[in-house]
Amino acid sequence: MLSLAPHLVGACPRQLCALEMAAPKVAVVGAGLIGLSTALCISEAFPSCRLSVLSEQFSPNTTGDVAAGMLIPHTYPGTPIHVQKQWFKETFTYLFAISNSAEASEAGIHLVSGWQVFKTPPKDEVPFWSDIVLGFRPMSAAELQKFPQHRSGQAFTTLKCDCPPYLLWLEKRLRANGVQVHTRRVADLWELHREYDVVVNCTGIGAHQLGGDPELLPVRGQVLKVHAPWVKHFIRDGDGSTYVYPGIDSVTLGGTREKGSWSLSPDPGTTKDIFDRCRSLEPSLQRAQDVRVKVGLRPSRSSVRLQREVLSRGGAKLLVVHSYGHGAGGFSVHRGTAKEATRLVGECIAALQGSSSRAKL
Ligand SMILES: Cc1cc2nc3c(=O)[nH]c(=O)nc-3n(C[C@H](O)[C@H](O)[C@H](O)COP(=O)(O)OP(=O)(O)OC[C@H]3O[C@@H](n4cnc5c(N)ncnc54)[C@H](O)[C@@H]3O)c2cc1C
Ligand SMILES: *[C@@H]1O[C@H](CO)[C@@H](O)[C@H](O)[C@H]1NC(C)=O
Ligand SMILES: *[C@@H]1O[C@H](CO)[C@@H](O)[C@H](O)[C@H]1NC(C)=O
Image (cartoon, rainbow, N blue to C red; front, top):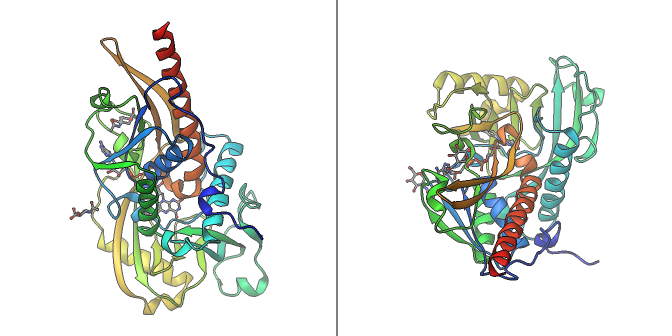
């Protein structure tokens, strides 16, 4: 049987750029999950562009390094469900191919099975993503015996992206595609207008700055990463407040959702509360060891901002593509939004080519 290299599955369609002009210079600002995955997609679609990633922080100091990286969609109220479903499907298909290749361990991508359990059964019995994850079904009575406080549940298999490995793998692939990676804090996108033709804003919660996007809010999340290698199934309390997500080297226990809080310091009372809640779902965690506490700020918005913008000052112009505001579900949709951002970068490049050919006439 023919097996496709994972980078060819769902690859961003190659497009010609630089037909009539020097290769466009594109900068992606931000080296979190969204910046790196967007840069990779751009480098696949426009191999002749000169692409750079500029970021203040890199893995292990990004939001994705705190997250569990589970592919279980969060719902964006401001985005049509069919669009969210498409993003999730593209992401699932892309990562499933990696999980089924020799790259899986280095990329930190693996399949994981488990349960989502409910004390009060949900109104929508079947979530919109049920036919994308594998083997979605109601839990059996025997399975439910493990959760005496819960009345119903759903069993399925999904994917998990372990970080830092996944972020480091994306960075390695970018470098292999000739992308330049620089440590740099960008105070204002306009400062890049002399150096770059197109700038992609993937700054996560960093996009909330004075005069920035008032719709963007931090939602603080504290988690514990513990050593408990006997825990093999994920467990998610249906409202998403408490979860046990086993990864390759550690199990992520969560969580909290604190709207508007900017604090990155762990709270000891919260640590104890998370541990107690998780132990009531999975009593064997009593013997977990090496507890590490981590905090991240979800860049939350009613919808992901995926949009072009033209900045202009004194006759000069800078083409911008925004991709931020992935909130609690960045892992679940990142490949889909990277493709959409890449399409918008393509529109910018076409506009540049149009204006440079007009200039020649
Ligand atoms: C506790 C927790 C658990 C989570 N669990 C899951 C999960 O299981 N599944 C899921 O799908 N999602 C989960 N998420 C959500 C997911 O982690 C985020 O959606 C995702 O990591 C956001 O990525 P990002 O690249 O937009 O942001 P970030 O990782 O914050 O990256 C932003 C980047 O931009 C850089 N930057 C910012 N401002 C500037 C500037 N001015 N100049 C230069 N660089 C700048 C930063 O240094 C950083 O590199 C979780 C989040 C948390 C906090
Ligand atoms: C992460 O942050 C720590 C503490 O600020 C710093 O020492 C380290 O160099 C950073 N790592 C990277 C890869 O930037
Ligand atoms: C990204 O866009 C937001 C909203 O326009 C803005 O507040 C933020 O400053 C931008 N990022 C950078 C690095 O300029």
